[in-house]
Length: 246
Ligand code: G3P
Ligand code: MG
Image 1: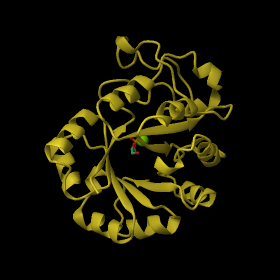
Image 2 (image 1 turned 45 degrees about the vertical axis):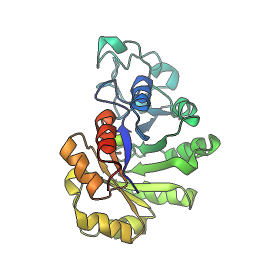
Image 3 (image 1 turned 90 degrees about the horizontal axis):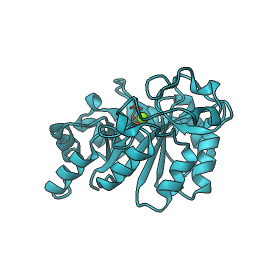
Image 4 (image 1 turned 60 degrees about the vertical axis):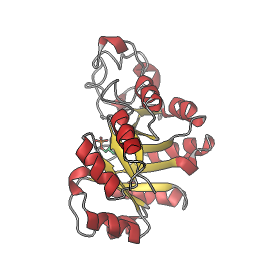
């Protein structure tokens, strides 16, 4: 199977990460999947934002968990990136699923619960994806081991990936024991042995964040199942040029 190109936080090199313009752009560039990050508001609305704190990517300050969704909607989540994107709003997960519903895109929803273990986040996200009938093309992922276990309890069939940036000789088996059916690894952990081991165990292996041509080429060559890239245009270009490697 050729490597699936996921836009990491949307086409985040060109538009503010995790916003509708970044997702639209990724789709226009031919991305085959979208990766996005989810945190939970004070009133339990899942929203798309990478950090626990709103400071870096909005004109506000403080923790997501201390604001209601309505309060967060008053913020500008685009100007930090460029004036061109002034007044871009934070997106709810639900609005994102509505947008993705009629597009042929794979989805990777990363639960950002490794620093703040939001109560009930797994169920809230799972139920929404199920409501939108998107379970068959969605993978949920997290760095939080306990959360992988909780997700697997919700559904035997949902794709769940264990995310890691740490070296671990037993990574594939560890992830399997947690109940994951995929591993999402930082690029520096990638080697042929790990890819083969994952595939022997029927696990998918996807790699982040792959922005340079030689790294993309290596992922394609090693038969990785997916890459996450801030520059989906580059990855799609290379994939076409290589005739859908390997
Ligand atoms: O899901 C892959 C990647 O996004 C994990 O790291 O920090 O970019 O969310 P981060
Ligand atoms: Mg992420």
